[in-house]
Length: 438
Image 1 (cartoon, rainbow, N blue to C red):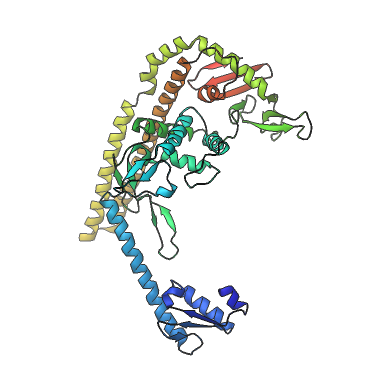
Image 2 (image 1 turned 180 degrees about the vertical axis):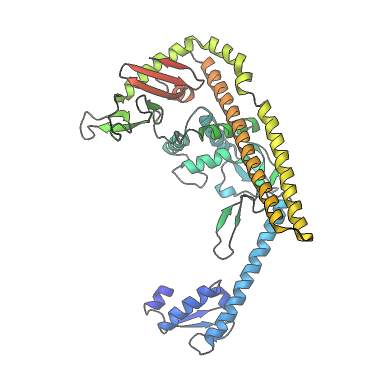
């Protein structure tokens, strides 16, 4: 409408009220002045204001400011209502864009079993070693609609499903909030506002133990330098034994009947000297993988026994848990001392130089303790994730018999990466740490 008015198609705009024209004073005045410069008049019916009138702009400024404050008041009231409902433990779900649950007759979430099967499948594929990219591509290829009803799945949607606590029956409230009532900009809540965690709020689609297992695997994969963002089973699983870079796929003879995909070091020609490792094709890697797996299967009983003997020693988190508790207590104590120091300074006259020294020392100690606590908790998560990864590996290995064909699922479950030494020597690194040279 404004564009048409500025181009001369409209000479009068009739508006019910100033509050309906714009929600803030700046936008209102800017647009009015633009239109006024082109000789276009606006009539505000409720306030009886004509913008070409000499008193029009003053009245618009006043009325727009009132409208803006009214908008702020409404927004704050709505925000207060939402935060009160969070504090009361009331859970709302965006059912139209949430896979696995429908709104029940009593207003509480009920499981949509047809959609829940997709959610369970996503969790299962992830625990089998599939990347979020591979899962998204698979669901897209099968024509399964996304939570929003679209045809193309993305890694963001898959990651959101894998990390959403609502699937284990809990609910974390106030994950994000609106920072500005005018722009409606949303921000992730990083401690600015209180959050509320409700346990066993509704029926779970994913068993809580399985959900926690997935979270540990997500944390473990996050340490792998984005290796899992792959589109093919072999992507980010073949490593150059010369420079340590990952192999990438290349298509040779793309426009002829001899078209084929090969794998080659991504940095083969980008360094000062050329990598000596060869290019490989799919069939070659798959053939060697079958040999390596069959050698592994032949020794699976010993591997399982050996792991059971050493798992407590290698992956124990008992000492780390004690450190975590001690550091948490230290953080709480330092936080209290800082608050006491601030309050003491506010109540009575204190030498400010001495206060600054004391305050800064406490802050440094608090930051150091928080840093240590974060590191210890990260190490606990990684140890749990690594132990669970090997347990999944051995569980699947125990069910395997000798294979004669390449199986993508077996590859995803068992292989960490393959190191290329020469054309005649590949080292298969399995997820339990076993290395087999073929």
